[in-house]
Image (cartoon, rainbow, N blue to C red; front, top):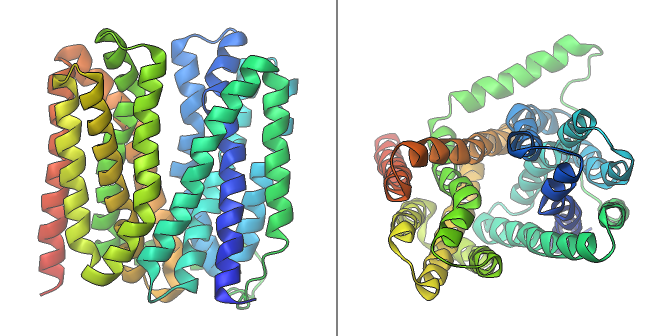
Length: 391
């Protein structure tokens, strides 16, 4: 199978996997949990528990893909996308729903690092463009899934929405079996858990000592702190300013579409002019648009700022993933992508918590200013560290 054909199958696989996953995740999951009697705190836990799965398992799964090959981990991840949606219609207990969400979170925790590492393996010279295109494809699933899920839950009920998510996941499984990757033999041939753990430990240590990977991953974390804060509190701020729910939803749609269309383009730009300047530029754009939002009451201006934040996200993401791949040892590429995913998920999970604490004690303006400041600090730390390492 040619490189371009393998890449096409990977991108198509990403579209169907993330349509399936996000069809369940937003807004169906919160509404379903509420229908089972969950209060706001429990809904927050149920929604976030899959992110916790990613924090715990993205690095180990990426390291395992270095040992056993990408295809085995991709296979497990695709199955984790396809099968859990069929279980949701039988759930009537909140504890069971929480446990199912943890299991369903295995999908992105196992699939994402291996898929990104596979793209980086395929394109060593044009990684920025390839990774930007692939992540744009997964984001298209993130755009279509919530729309389809909300419509199905409203018109046909929760069971139909969940079963449709399962169908998309099963299509992804079928696409996966059309994907042929050249896989090296497993790095660990000895039987038993000890040799595998020892090899994984080497991967963890190599990544933990790689300052370029760590500082680049921290830029994604800073961006995702702001992203998580927007997901949780931009709707509340918008409603407080007199916007309706549809207008608030449009803010997120504009942000997502801008990011979707910008990622492939900015990936190509990063291949030509370098990753580092674009990462700094993207963080500054995110910070400036983010800090301005709570000072604006005009819907039109909020649309512009949301679009700007989406563009900043695209600039950072398309360059940071490629830089992590460039900076990782070839045989530890999966561990490097896993580390980036882990740090990014920590930022995403902490964003709503940090913003909630700050808003409770200061104001929207103060909270957004602090989080914007974290992005600027991340940009300064990244630039200074990369200049030091390049000497």
